[in-house]
Image (cartoon, rainbow, N blue to C red):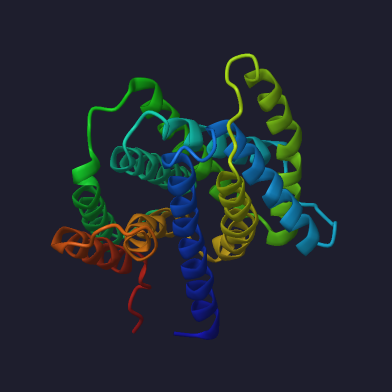
Length: 280
Protein backbone atom coordinates (compact mmCIF):
# COMPACT_ATOMS: atom_id res chain seq x y z
CA UNK A 1 0.00 0.00 0.00
CA UNK A 2 1.51 3.32 -1.08
CA UNK A 3 1.60 6.47 1.05
CA UNK A 4 -1.49 8.01 -0.58
CA UNK A 5 -3.55 4.85 -0.06
CA UNK A 6 -2.39 4.61 3.55
CA UNK A 7 -3.35 8.23 4.22
CA UNK A 8 -6.75 7.70 2.62
CA UNK A 9 -7.37 4.59 4.73
CA UNK A 10 -6.39 6.38 7.95
CA UNK A 11 -8.55 9.43 7.18
CA UNK A 12 -11.51 7.23 6.28
CA UNK A 13 -11.15 5.02 9.36
CA UNK A 14 -10.88 8.06 11.65
CA UNK A 15 -14.00 9.60 10.10
CA UNK A 16 -15.97 6.36 10.58
CA UNK A 17 -14.95 6.20 14.25
CA UNK A 18 -16.12 9.83 14.64
CA UNK A 19 -19.47 8.97 13.01
CA UNK A 20 -19.90 6.00 15.34
CA UNK A 21 -19.11 8.21 18.33
CA UNK A 22 -21.71 10.67 17.09
CA UNK A 23 -24.29 7.90 17.00
CA UNK A 24 -23.49 6.98 20.61
CA UNK A 25 -23.72 10.59 21.78
CA UNK A 26 -27.05 11.09 20.01
CA UNK A 27 -28.43 7.82 21.38
CA UNK A 28 -27.37 8.67 24.92
CA UNK A 29 -28.81 12.20 24.80
CA UNK A 30 -32.08 11.57 22.98
CA UNK A 31 -32.73 8.06 24.26
CA UNK A 32 -32.32 9.19 27.85
CA UNK A 33 -34.59 12.25 27.43
CA UNK A 34 -31.69 14.45 28.48
CA UNK A 35 -32.58 16.98 25.78
CA UNK A 36 -35.25 17.53 23.15
CA UNK A 37 -34.48 16.89 19.48
CA UNK A 38 -34.55 20.50 18.26
CA UNK A 39 -32.39 21.78 21.12
CA UNK A 40 -29.93 18.92 20.58
CA UNK A 41 -29.65 19.75 16.88
CA UNK A 42 -29.24 23.46 17.60
CA UNK A 43 -26.49 22.98 20.20
CA UNK A 44 -24.81 20.36 18.04
CA UNK A 45 -24.57 22.62 15.01
CA UNK A 46 -23.63 25.71 17.04
CA UNK A 47 -20.82 23.79 18.76
CA UNK A 48 -19.62 22.41 15.43
CA UNK A 49 -19.65 25.88 13.89
CA UNK A 50 -17.69 27.35 16.82
CA UNK A 51 -15.09 24.55 16.87
CA UNK A 52 -14.51 24.72 13.13
CA UNK A 53 -14.34 28.53 13.15
CA UNK A 54 -11.57 28.32 15.75
CA UNK A 55 -9.71 25.58 13.89
CA UNK A 56 -10.02 27.40 10.58
CA UNK A 57 -8.95 30.60 12.35
CA UNK A 58 -12.09 32.36 11.27
CA UNK A 59 -11.42 31.77 7.58
CA UNK A 60 -14.37 29.92 6.14
CA UNK A 61 -14.81 29.38 2.43
CA UNK A 62 -15.59 26.68 -0.06
CA UNK A 63 -18.98 25.85 1.38
CA UNK A 64 -22.37 26.54 -0.16
CA UNK A 65 -25.96 27.12 0.86
CA UNK A 66 -26.92 23.84 -0.78
CA UNK A 67 -24.37 21.89 1.27
CA UNK A 68 -25.43 23.75 4.43
CA UNK A 69 -29.08 22.90 3.75
CA UNK A 70 -28.13 19.24 3.32
CA UNK A 71 -26.14 19.27 6.56
CA UNK A 72 -28.93 21.01 8.47
CA UNK A 73 -31.60 18.74 6.98
CA UNK A 74 -29.64 15.63 7.91
CA UNK A 75 -29.03 16.75 11.51
CA UNK A 76 -32.63 17.84 12.11
CA UNK A 77 -34.36 14.88 10.42
CA UNK A 78 -32.01 12.43 12.17
CA UNK A 79 -32.82 13.82 15.61
CA UNK A 80 -36.58 14.06 14.99
CA UNK A 81 -36.81 10.57 13.48
CA UNK A 82 -35.29 8.85 16.51
CA UNK A 83 -38.10 10.17 18.70
CA UNK A 84 -40.52 7.71 17.09
CA UNK A 85 -38.62 4.78 15.53
CA UNK A 86 -36.39 2.07 17.06
CA UNK A 87 -32.63 2.33 16.74
CA UNK A 88 -32.32 -0.76 14.54
CA UNK A 89 -35.00 0.36 12.11
CA UNK A 90 -33.50 3.84 12.00
CA UNK A 91 -30.00 2.57 11.20
CA UNK A 92 -31.31 0.34 8.42
CA UNK A 93 -33.36 3.13 6.82
CA UNK A 94 -30.57 5.69 7.16
CA UNK A 95 -27.83 3.62 5.60
CA UNK A 96 -29.99 2.23 2.80
CA UNK A 97 -30.88 5.82 1.88
CA UNK A 98 -27.21 6.87 2.00
CA UNK A 99 -26.18 3.91 -0.18
CA UNK A 100 -28.91 4.54 -2.75
CA UNK A 101 -28.16 8.26 -2.97
CA UNK A 102 -24.41 7.93 -3.42
CA UNK A 103 -24.38 4.82 -5.60
CA UNK A 104 -26.97 6.28 -7.98
CA UNK A 105 -24.93 9.47 -8.20
CA UNK A 106 -21.88 7.41 -9.06
CA UNK A 107 -23.72 5.51 -11.77
CA UNK A 108 -25.04 8.76 -13.24
CA UNK A 109 -21.48 10.13 -13.28
CA UNK A 110 -20.27 7.14 -15.27
CA UNK A 111 -18.79 4.99 -12.52
CA UNK A 112 -19.13 1.28 -13.22
CA UNK A 113 -18.12 -0.63 -10.10
CA UNK A 114 -16.83 -4.17 -10.78
CA UNK A 115 -18.79 -7.27 -9.79
CA UNK A 116 -16.52 -7.62 -6.73
CA UNK A 117 -17.81 -4.28 -5.42
CA UNK A 118 -21.46 -5.31 -5.79
CA UNK A 119 -20.79 -8.64 -4.08
CA UNK A 120 -19.04 -6.84 -1.22
CA UNK A 121 -21.95 -4.42 -0.91
CA UNK A 122 -24.43 -7.31 -0.83
CA UNK A 123 -22.46 -9.07 1.91
CA UNK A 124 -22.17 -5.86 3.95
CA UNK A 125 -25.90 -5.08 3.61
CA UNK A 126 -26.80 -8.63 4.68
CA UNK A 127 -24.57 -8.12 7.71
CA UNK A 128 -26.33 -4.82 8.45
CA UNK A 129 -29.71 -6.56 8.30
CA UNK A 130 -28.50 -9.22 10.75
CA UNK A 131 -27.03 -6.55 13.03
CA UNK A 132 -30.23 -4.48 13.18
CA UNK A 133 -32.71 -7.39 13.17
CA UNK A 134 -33.48 -7.38 16.94
CA UNK A 135 -34.37 -3.68 16.82
CA UNK A 136 -36.52 -3.87 13.71
CA UNK A 137 -40.19 -3.05 14.06
CA UNK A 138 -42.98 -1.57 11.99
CA UNK A 139 -41.83 2.05 11.90
CA UNK A 140 -43.94 5.12 12.44
CA UNK A 141 -44.51 6.42 8.87
CA UNK A 142 -43.42 9.98 9.66
CA UNK A 143 -40.35 8.79 11.56
CA UNK A 144 -39.40 6.47 8.70
CA UNK A 145 -39.79 9.28 6.17
CA UNK A 146 -37.65 11.60 8.28
CA UNK A 147 -34.87 9.02 8.53
CA UNK A 148 -34.91 8.38 4.79
CA UNK A 149 -34.69 12.14 4.20
CA UNK A 150 -31.78 12.27 6.67
CA UNK A 151 -29.98 9.57 4.67
CA UNK A 152 -30.55 11.35 1.35
CA UNK A 153 -29.36 14.65 2.84
CA UNK A 154 -26.22 13.05 4.27
CA UNK A 155 -25.51 11.32 0.97
CA UNK A 156 -25.77 14.64 -0.85
CA UNK A 157 -23.55 16.36 1.73
CA UNK A 158 -20.93 13.65 1.29
CA UNK A 159 -21.05 13.97 -2.48
CA UNK A 160 -20.45 17.72 -2.22
CA UNK A 161 -17.32 16.98 -0.22
CA UNK A 162 -15.67 15.20 -3.13
CA UNK A 163 -15.03 18.59 -4.75
CA UNK A 164 -13.66 20.25 -1.64
CA UNK A 165 -10.06 21.41 -1.82
CA UNK A 166 -10.01 22.85 1.72
CA UNK A 167 -12.06 20.47 3.93
CA UNK A 168 -11.66 22.35 7.21
CA UNK A 169 -12.64 25.70 5.73
CA UNK A 170 -15.48 24.21 3.67
CA UNK A 171 -17.01 22.55 6.72
CA UNK A 172 -16.54 25.71 8.79
CA UNK A 173 -18.39 27.64 6.10
CA UNK A 174 -21.19 25.06 5.89
CA UNK A 175 -21.67 24.93 9.65
CA UNK A 176 -21.71 28.74 9.82
CA UNK A 177 -24.40 28.85 7.13
CA UNK A 178 -26.48 26.44 9.25
CA UNK A 179 -26.74 28.95 12.11
CA UNK A 180 -29.49 31.15 10.60
CA UNK A 181 -31.37 28.01 9.54
CA UNK A 182 -31.33 26.54 13.03
CA UNK A 183 -32.27 29.87 14.64
CA UNK A 184 -35.27 30.11 12.33
CA UNK A 185 -36.28 26.50 13.04
CA UNK A 186 -35.87 26.93 16.79
CA UNK A 187 -38.04 30.05 16.71
CA UNK A 188 -40.76 28.36 14.67
CA UNK A 189 -40.82 25.33 16.99
CA UNK A 190 -41.34 27.31 20.21
CA UNK A 191 -45.15 27.54 19.96
CA UNK A 192 -45.38 23.76 19.51
CA UNK A 193 -42.76 22.34 21.88
CA UNK A 194 -41.15 23.57 25.07
CA UNK A 195 -37.36 23.15 25.05
CA UNK A 196 -36.10 20.60 27.57
CA UNK A 197 -32.37 20.75 28.17
CA UNK A 198 -30.46 19.17 31.06
CA UNK A 199 -26.79 19.81 31.77
CA UNK A 200 -25.97 16.29 30.61
CA UNK A 201 -27.95 16.73 27.40
CA UNK A 202 -26.25 20.03 26.63
CA UNK A 203 -22.80 18.52 27.24
CA UNK A 204 -23.55 15.57 24.98
CA UNK A 205 -24.85 17.87 22.24
CA UNK A 206 -21.74 20.06 22.43
CA UNK A 207 -19.45 17.01 22.29
CA UNK A 208 -21.41 15.68 19.33
CA UNK A 209 -21.13 18.99 17.50
CA UNK A 210 -17.58 20.07 18.28
CA UNK A 211 -15.81 16.69 18.14
CA UNK A 212 -17.76 13.95 16.40
CA UNK A 213 -19.47 16.27 13.88
CA UNK A 214 -17.25 19.29 13.32
CA UNK A 215 -13.85 17.64 13.34
CA UNK A 216 -15.20 14.30 12.11
CA UNK A 217 -16.83 15.88 9.06
CA UNK A 218 -13.70 17.85 8.23
CA UNK A 219 -11.70 14.60 8.25
CA UNK A 220 -14.37 12.97 6.06
CA UNK A 221 -14.16 15.83 3.57
CA UNK A 222 -10.39 15.32 3.45
CA UNK A 223 -10.88 11.64 2.58
CA UNK A 224 -13.71 12.03 0.08
CA UNK A 225 -11.75 13.40 -2.91
CA UNK A 226 -9.56 10.26 -2.70
CA UNK A 227 -12.53 7.86 -2.88
CA UNK A 228 -14.88 6.86 -5.67
CA UNK A 229 -18.54 7.58 -4.97
CA UNK A 230 -19.25 3.87 -4.59
CA UNK A 231 -16.38 3.47 -2.13
CA UNK A 232 -17.48 6.50 -0.11
CA UNK A 233 -20.97 5.03 0.13
CA UNK A 234 -19.97 1.50 1.09
CA UNK A 235 -17.37 2.33 3.75
CA UNK A 236 -20.09 4.06 5.78
CA UNK A 237 -21.65 0.66 6.42
CA UNK A 238 -18.87 0.16 8.99
CA UNK A 239 -20.49 2.78 11.25
CA UNK A 240 -23.30 0.58 12.72
CA UNK A 241 -20.98 -2.19 13.96
CA UNK A 242 -18.52 0.38 15.30
CA UNK A 243 -21.39 2.07 17.12
CA UNK A 244 -22.64 -1.30 18.38
CA UNK A 245 -19.25 -2.19 19.85
CA UNK A 246 -19.03 1.33 21.25
CA UNK A 247 -22.35 0.70 22.98
CA UNK A 248 -20.91 -2.46 24.52
CA UNK A 249 -17.82 -0.61 25.77
CA UNK A 250 -19.39 2.72 26.78
CA UNK A 251 -23.11 2.19 27.39
CA UNK A 252 -23.13 -1.24 29.01
CA UNK A 253 -24.84 -2.97 26.10
CA UNK A 254 -24.38 -6.69 25.49
CA UNK A 255 -22.22 -8.34 22.82
CA UNK A 256 -23.37 -11.67 21.42
CA UNK A 257 -22.60 -14.07 18.59
CA UNK A 258 -25.02 -12.25 16.27
CA UNK A 259 -23.12 -8.99 16.70
CA UNK A 260 -19.78 -10.69 15.99
CA UNK A 261 -21.06 -12.49 12.89
CA UNK A 262 -22.79 -9.39 11.55
CA UNK A 263 -19.67 -7.31 12.11
CA UNK A 264 -17.51 -9.88 10.31
CA UNK A 265 -19.91 -9.86 7.35
CA UNK A 266 -20.03 -6.05 7.16
CA UNK A 267 -16.29 -5.53 7.49
CA UNK A 268 -15.54 -8.39 5.11
CA UNK A 269 -18.00 -7.04 2.57
CA UNK A 270 -16.60 -3.53 2.80
CA UNK A 271 -13.03 -4.83 2.44
CA UNK A 272 -14.04 -6.82 -0.65
CA UNK A 273 -15.86 -3.84 -2.16
CA UNK A 274 -13.20 -1.17 -1.70
CA UNK A 275 -9.94 -3.06 -2.14
CA UNK A 276 -8.06 -1.97 -5.26
CA UNK A 277 -8.06 -4.24 -8.26
CA UNK A 278 -5.01 -6.44 -8.63
CA UNK A 279 -2.39 -5.14 -11.01
CA UNK A 280 -0.19 -7.21 -13.28
